Image (cartoon, rainbow, N blue to C red):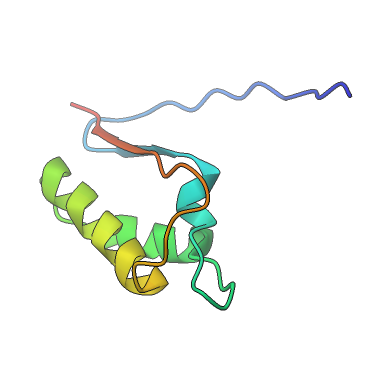
Length: 84
């Protein structure tokens, strides 16, 4: 199966925040199968503290709370960077 992707360029400005994540973040699920999703992740990112370490901890805690610490079935990778 061949997959094709489009290239896009985005200019980042000073004070922008970039988040890269695996599908294990947005597909983190409750025991009943509800997904954390991109809307919740976006809301957490927008409400996250300025400090990157605190922001990461807050988002991961929100995922743990949402899933009621339900075991991950996929990797959960999240990288957050600020443009300086």
